[in-house]
Length: 325
Image 1 (cartoon, rainbow, N blue to C red):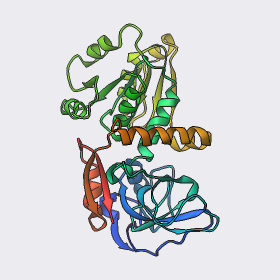
Image 2: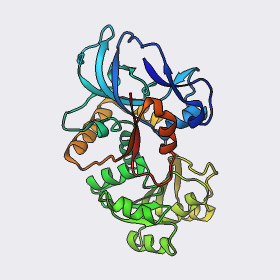
Image 3: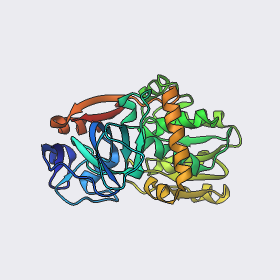
Image 4: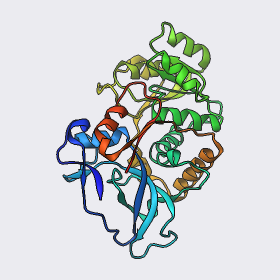
């Protein structure tokens, strides 16, 4: 089969190339899925660089989420059938014509959900929904998040709104405000604009935010703590700058603030099966109803994987970049 492979770790645009790979065979409890579309996530690119929590054996096929149809069943698989349209995330090698997934992690996809949405519906949106529950915020309480125009940020804003939880969404470019508004996302502020902190505080009111999500690091983390109310929680979701979080100790002390990290993989492992099914069911329902929109920047062929990963890293892109075998 054809696949997007890398034989070394490094810049994805340099080390990734389309090539031939053996067609995988499902083992007991596994299925093989013929790929229709597979997204390019930031954590996929960090994996290719060799700088993520999971480091594959080389040569490796990129990708961790995909949509397709089942074309082979391993021993003992029940409840799934050949020809069924499904998606899977937290797997390996999805940037290929076929990939293997444990049957327990395969999600049947309703026809009401388009391919472009179904292909990216599990990993990032499920992380966003798990993050929303992790924050323990009640309807009417405020969340503040930076990099709100990223995949998780947009999804968090939409899912929180559907639950009656308001979110202040911070973007780093003035143009990002209109991009978010086009998706129906409110309370968007550009940190490039003068007086943005005062504008945010006017929206939050005297109580401040109950929780904040930082995906930038550096001084941006301190900005978020400054917007928290008493007893608020700051969650580190990522570090776009790669810089250590810089948080004023006075804000942490006098607000009795809590600072903690979130890694979706660990949270998912600790989550009860019933809770995960509930969250996946909510994602399917909100995607089918149109409450959750997952835009696409572009679709590339496997042979154009270098161009695809370059497009994925482009500042200000409007949606996810997908690969089509």
